[in-house]
Length: 255
Figure 1 (tube, rainbow, N blue to C red):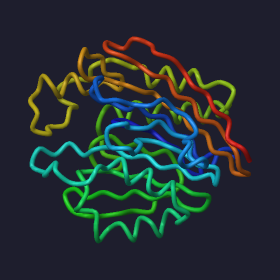
Figure 2: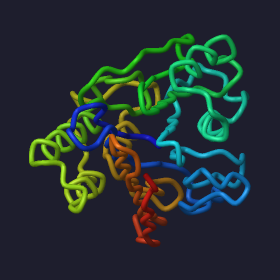
Figure 3: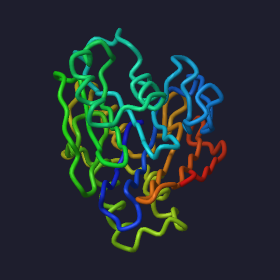
Figure 4: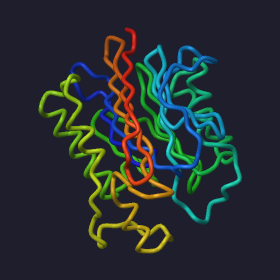
């Protein structure tokens, strides 16, 4: 998951609204959004190479999401960051406690951002440039491959469109504006781009919310709605090389 906007405690019905894209190599084996047979309470896509997930929810109303941190100086030989999301969803620990407990061992994982949300708290945890955490306050927030709420143009644009959807009522029956925002493939101006050490041409390509490429690009667009009184919805749209549509899965969550 490489760009996400989410609203925490900012809507009368929805405790959490999240819209995000996962960007990855198209050759990396992946299972579509589904209930996990080996952990029936989890609803998530699955990375078949390392076994974890980039985004999932469970029947207890919890949500976990992970992104990488774009830092060429960081070692890339740690534990899979996707396990941070799936291991938490397999357990029963609350978001705040899990975030605190992760800090002493955060350095053993590949560079990550981790969002955890339960019925009381939403937390952000990262291990770059050093282990750190924050309890997320009410409102619309963004995350990409830097710290929470960093001013990356594609993240800010997605956040603005999520805020507009909320301002229009946040109708769970009309997710088209959120998926339209996730499909935004415009390249942002050079002066607005971060400098993460990958060169300007690649910064331009990766500045789009929706990335088209033959070998690497957006693999999934996902919207999550978790209601205050329990239940909700998760919808995943899947993409192949150059943005070819591969299907959609929609799953209602029991209250």
